[in-house]
Amino acid sequence: MTATLPALAASTRTLAPATYDCILLAGFGGPEGQDDVIPYLRNVTRGRGVPDERLEEVAHHYRHFGGISPINQQNRDLKVALEAEIERRGLGLPVYWGNRFWAPYFTDALKELHADGHRRVLVLVTTAFSSYSGCRAYREDLAAALDEAGLAGELVLDKVRQYFDHPGFVEPNVDAVLGGLRELSERGDGDRLHVMFATHSIPSSAADVSGPREALPDGTPVPTGGGEEWNAGGGWYVEQQRAVAALVMDRVADEFPGVPWSLVFQSRSGDPRMPWLEPDINLAIEALPESTTGLVISPLGFVSDHMEVAWDLDNEALETCEGRELSAVRVPTVGVDPAFVAGLIDLVEERHVAAAGEAPREREALTTLGPWQDVCPADCCLGRAAKPTIASAE
Ligand SMILES: CC1=C(CCC(=O)O)c2cc3nc(cc4[nH]c(cc5[nH]c(cc1n2)c(C)c5CCC(=O)O)c(CCC(=O)O)c4C)C(CCC(=O)O)=C3C
Ligand SMILES: [Fe+2]
Image (cartoon, rainbow, N blue to C red; front, top):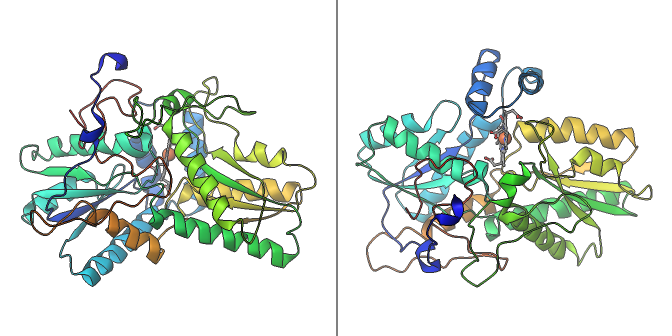
């Protein structure tokens, strides 16, 4: 199946700069009241074989917070911050907001921006890493929304690259981890520290096919993973997170040299007999050496402190720490940190030029994996049947 798809030449993974006329902030979406919770969860898990018991368990997480996920407000705040940065730079690009799983849906946002006269859309996705859930699913859902809105021939939808190693994403994460390490030191629990970078678990089979099935333009081969104590999985999803985590630790090493760290996974669902990325954060906390005096938890896999952070880390993981009397701090995601907001607009400016022939902003990347592709090969992150997508070579 995937092996028969034609390979995409490295050079075609970068799009020439162009002029866009608006930005679409593409979010995940979340419920905003108790009555939304079940319809929302049905949207998220449609056709995905997530067991009912898991849905009930997750519904309980939302119910605990009045049925309201913080994610929509966080995206509203991000939209306002992006608008202010665009205004500051005089770019004149309006920002629209749409979600995969809750109102405002992608279809509504596309209809709205089209009605306002826009035709060339640059999409900013609220996830930094490459995986089916973090990239391809957004591209598929945008293609479906284009169709549903009846605008398939009318709009151009290009997407900003995954930005895991862009300074705008890395720097706030460095600051956050540094803040956590300092806090533990000030508490007097800084003797033997550990940093855990938490990210969403995905099926190992999905991890293995995350990102392109070909070498990077510089020849870096597709990562095969394995060989670790835990099931770390292969593919670019894990590789990108490991690279960013290592970079963050390198950056804090001046002040906190030699602090051990690990990449851990959270929020797994699906059939328990299927392998997903491990270790689960809670098991990893249990397995820390008895001598560990303080733990920093960085939600590296997410861009805002949404429900997966508020529940799975702040409730569950911190409780696991309490259970073994381990002093711990969960540090913030990038959220609306000014450096992150500015970084997203830098990413826009490396693609958008006001007029043909103008030089775009330089493409920044802090690991050897980047700058990541603007356009995905046809089989990128493709695990199941191919659906049409935007921002793909085919
Ligand atoms: C990689 C990844 C990201 C990061 C990239 C990105 O940010 O997009 C992410 C983000 C998020 N996931 C979220 C919520 C949920 N994810 C679910 C289910 C799943 N996620 C998966 C993966 C990911 N998820 C997978 C492989 C499943 C299994 C089912 C399937 O294959 O589709 C379910 C169903 C119940 C359950 O199984 O837990 C819910 C409710 C929210 C919103 C939180 C809020 O409301 O504040 C956000 C930001
Ligand atoms: Fe999820």
